Length: 330
Ligand code: SF4
Image 1 (cartoon, rainbow, N blue to C red):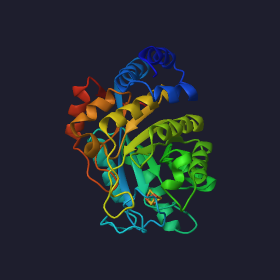
Image 2 (cartoon, rainbow, N blue to C red; image 1 turned 30 degrees about the vertical axis):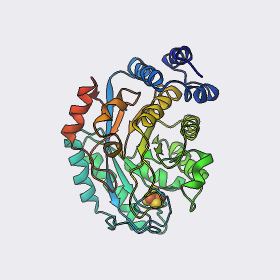
Image 3 (cartoon, protein in one colour; image 1 turned 120 degrees about the horizontal axis):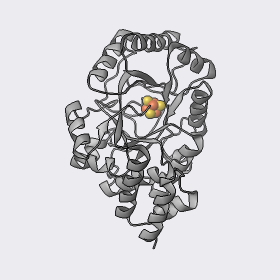
Image 4 (cartoon, rainbow, N blue to C red; image 1 turned 90 degrees about the horizontal axis):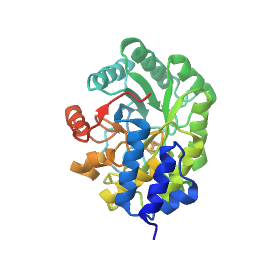
């Protein structure tokens, strides 16, 4: 059994800004969860302060996606009752950005349900994204972000030219578990999209979903991958099983598993923004603040892609109740 002395040693290492090694990360996964969680909270507080970085998203094109990600209500492979609509107009995206700014979000993500935005096949949609980015830059102070699926270097350069500096593309899960989640594209496709965004000079937000049947070792494996890829921000979604998807009957992960996973991510990436994103209300209910005291320091606020979220006031109260405050962490 791994004891608390080991956790204390790992805490000192993480406080020095160094993430734990691969062996140490897997050993921490066997340590008492309470000790790991408390230590991760201290690492977050002393390394990064009490700020909570917030972001918000708009689903700019919903449903009908040709990919088959097993968790996703928007895949055309599954019979879900998700809203389907074509690409929003740039002005509608701008309005959503303004609402997110009013609600106190630091960043605003434009998300599309596609394998990739694909400038060649759908040039008019690509142009709408560029126009929306320009409008957000011109008319708000919120930082635009985008989640556009697989992108080419040429597309990445055009996005940067329009004013985009932040890009999201999740790896979703560990490479060794990826085939249990998606069959229409590979793990390597996802990593390549992240590299393309990085090579174009964008900051990358890339993370995972807990609760797709993976175990704690898979969660650790994914975190080590994200560290190797050198992403800037790490979103952690918790599966909210959607009726009609292959994962509809999956048992929810326990609160303890979520806290442990978040804390392990803090030990592996002691100086990154670790952001709790989709599924937090459903899975954590009144324990959401506990995750902010387990090493997390970011939140996705407002509505999610296909489900509603907690209101802005509720989030602010929750953040304050654990002694933290909304802050732009860059
Ligand atoms: S996660 Fe993205 S790529 Fe996968 S099915 Fe959903 S919208 Fe398509």
